[in-house]
Length: 360
Image 1 (cartoon, rainbow, N blue to C red):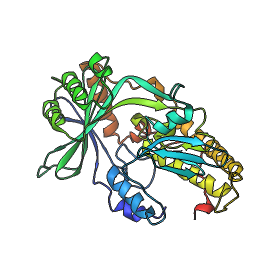
Image 2: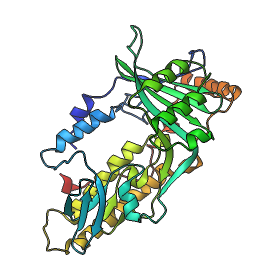
Image 3: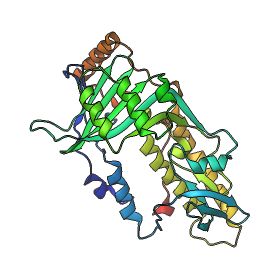
Image 4: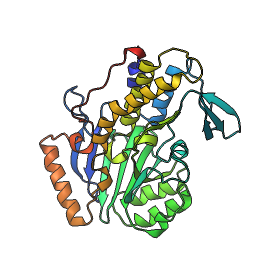
């Protein structure tokens, strides 16, 4: 894509991930794999902040792509020759193809399927993860290491640091708490209050981190869910990324799947549609061929990534099971076992990334 140098210049300095117990004692450590061989570990050599990656993609494409900010697609209507898109500011534009890349709870996907039809998102039962940052200066001898902690009651926290001034916090649990289950998605106040109750007395640094969560202005709570569609397109509308095939954060493959899927969709459009300008309506046959190729090339990849995800996540439930897990992780750490093979879904078998000369 021509952006590797820019990407590497923004890579975060995370050196690996450690697992600690309730007293903060390290029980296992898995370093980043920088050998260039084998699978990536949990901390990969390509860790980057979302905002930095978005900026790189924007800077690389802004001279060739028209970007419109601060409005979204409200509705669309297909005709024989085009798709008419109405924005939230009531403006209307016409396109050959509309591609929805608007996330797990995609509005464009709902419109494509029909608002009176069931959506294609399948929640993982009672599984929640929240994200936020808290201002916390890096200590003199502190290293850039992710830290994972599990508490009884199917609760867990992970912290990561990408700069000396703040800490990223991931706080997750499996719970049937009605307050959280009934909270409106995006009702930050209720979501924070529910998670604060759930993590009370969990141990390690949870009291400090929960207090930081209550004051965080970038808090986001995710109901973990899998997106599965029988088809990623309909007529002149297609979806890509989490809108089409969200694999959940459990796979560690959300961004990878989105980037590879977008690459294949672009490649198939380039291969079948190219730079030709056909007469009105004649391009539909080419578009159908491109969208068919997108499905055929990429679905085998996503079938492997999403396999078994709907079964949920097996959190340790009590102090004994956590002690056993920490002990096993300690043994794996001692023998330098690469845990990326078990945590990530990168090892997709029998599938090769297509090469599109049309994109070069």
